[in-house]
Length: 100
Image 1 (cartoon, helix red, strand yellow):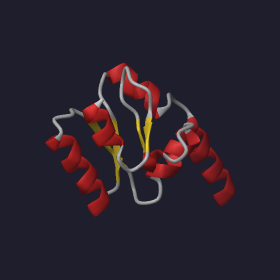
Image 2 (cartoon, rainbow, N blue to C red; image 1 turned 90 degrees about the vertical axis):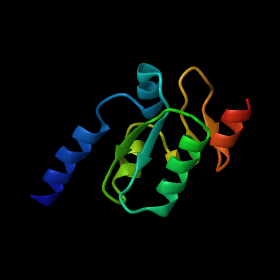
Image 3 (cartoon, rainbow, N blue to C red; image 1 turned 30 degrees about the vertical axis):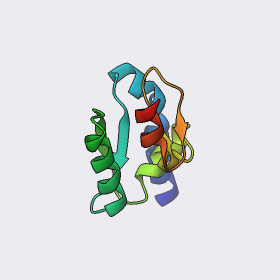
Image 4 (cartoon, rainbow, N blue to C red; image 1 turned 45 degrees about the vertical axis):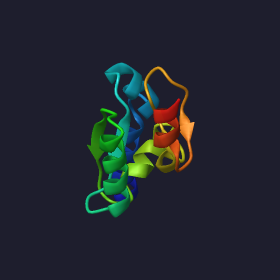
């Protein structure tokens, strides 16, 4: 029973556009966060300080990055998807995008 429920959840989560496609559609970078994470707070602060508008999507701990993996964005925690730009990878993605 549990494996069937997990299979249904996985098929539901994996549907839909990738994070890069959503960023292009919304014309805003997407920030996936988990509640009470100081790393997410730092990323949010950096985006706000750089003046970069963004869409924040909050997920349960450990589930948000799995959602990104299922949608084809492995290593999303190290990647910034910005509309109209190439995807920036690495911990300095926001800074590099700002100075580009």
